[in-house]
Amino acid sequence: QVHLAESGGGSVQAGGSLRLSCTASGDILPVNIMSWYRQAPGRERERVATITSIGTTSYVDSVKGRFTISRDDATNAIYLQMDNLKPEDSAVYYCSYVHPARGTLYGQGTQVTVSS
Figure 1: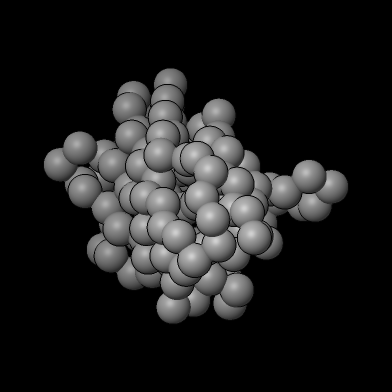
Figure 2: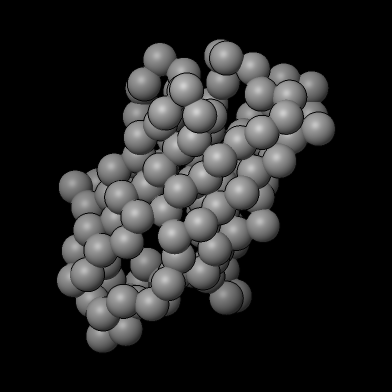
């Protein structure tokens, strides 16, 4: 079993910042890939940022320079620092973990709302 718990969402004005947190528990392997996804109403789920167990990161073009993904292996946590938020960043944000046997697993999500 793998449990992913997100927190840190909320409502901010454009230009503001939020920091999302995700704690993974259960059958978590030391070598892994974790990501943040988001899904806005009427749109497909989109991968926002990814970090590997060796610290390699990647971002969707729309958030490069504004979002930063990081991890703390001691607590099996990943974070997403979101700066200079825009209304188009509004979505439910999901933490994910790639399980070698079960594929990509997601948490319950946390809502981010950015007003103009």
